[in-house]
Figure 1 (cartoon, protein in one colour):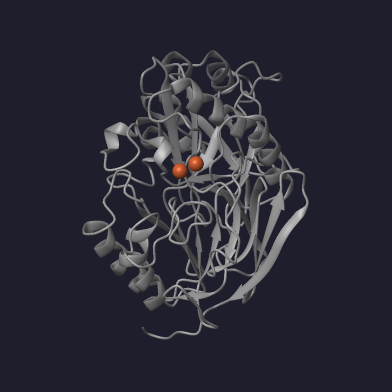
Figure 2 (cartoon, protein in one colour):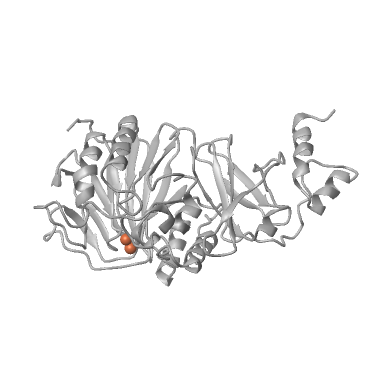
Length: 420
Ligand SMILES: [Fe+2]
Ligand SMILES: [Fe+2]
């Protein structure tokens, strides 16, 4: 009799036709370790990690390629330092407007805060990732930004992000600037991300995306089919709508909103937001990401009429952020660096919410001054990313320019819980 892991290994082998694997089964020692190629000869293009469920116990691995390349290549994965290899096939769907496919395999039942290694088939190089911890018992660090594209500044910011060794990256919309129409631009962004976003230990740094106007052919008021590349890549997290939440155990929740690109702000999305925030108002860390800012640093702001940029956010969402104890809101779209004062109802308040932005990973404009916009505490005209470091009850938010200079530092702690 074989031990259970051996039985599973043999059963699952029927999924495979690869010659190298067959040799292992027939070989004299029939070791449990699959017959990985000694030199990698297959390179899964645009390989990256993301999440669609709890990052403490799951990881989703994706790449873009030809169906023929995937047919005999499941993902093989094992905890680092072990040879307890398991395999799982990739599901696939079309990469829009091309003959290519997007391949996805969600690994579940993983151990928290654990390094894993994996391969795509038997003949790829070995890759690595790490799951998030079950509790916030170590320092957590993630990077956010938006408005990236595929230019030289984007690549510089990519590399700066990687050396921060973040647990993950969030790009809050206007990811590739393909406008829902140009597969080559989206493909190039994903190839750059895959190449650049590996930490100094060689781990793939997971990417979470949020919808912006440049993901959508028509920018605003459209349907999911006008944002074909975003949804081809991220519909694991966004299976039906342009908004979603992601819970990291019981210590952190991220809420991603759709600023009227494929989901109207008012109505169903706002109803969902209220329910989602209410269920999470006691979380130690509750962060919201949206593309178009409630408190713009470049575009028009009209506090009299509530119209202009971010008017819908301010009318429908900001009262919910305040009521349900959101800790910080990450905004984008205006292509500057900005930090607002802690705000309640648009005014400075000791118990207010800080809005950080405004999306200049790879695009840049000149911001308005704090004199012109009193809600702004700090602005800069700098390509930037933000590093968010969570150490127990304290959170540090550090903005770095694309040359690595510190643009701004602030800290936040859990807001006192006051119902508005
Ligand atoms: Fe943008
Ligand atoms: Fe935008």
